[in-house]
Length: 218
Image (cartoon, rainbow, N blue to C red):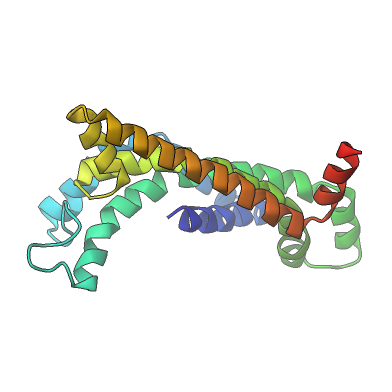
């Protein structure tokens, strides 16, 4: 889910940077900000009311219908609404940070020089700017895990979808503190591992980071 959030965030950020200060940029920023500030639990209830109660095209809760645990299509249908809530509640937060980082990059001298040489704006954005901000994006992805996990807890509770979020809520509700502590430890391990992996990926993307780390030790 986190990968999907960041893929969409990068696409929206690139679109805003490509059409900076145009109606496309303004509409995406305003709509994204409005959606981000909608409480996830309220958004989930509204989606259930629209698509499950009124239109009757999507299931409102659970991971699958009774007797259809092995039906992949049925499981996908049950994932649509929870996944939509989790994506919408986090998408613009990261898209806006990436957009601002890209706009800072666009104003640097090497971009102006590339534009003067006749290189297209799309090529500069995708080939140079995005590559230079990639370490920042990877770092944001690493530290976003607790934020995204908190959204899954809300979505799983609203839609009664089985997962770590729903299990954490149930363990707190019934005072099963041993299980709750175990889930907290698992979350902590995910955060630490993601930070380590992000650092390794950043060193591959930008070898200067590794050389800077070595020089700091010396």
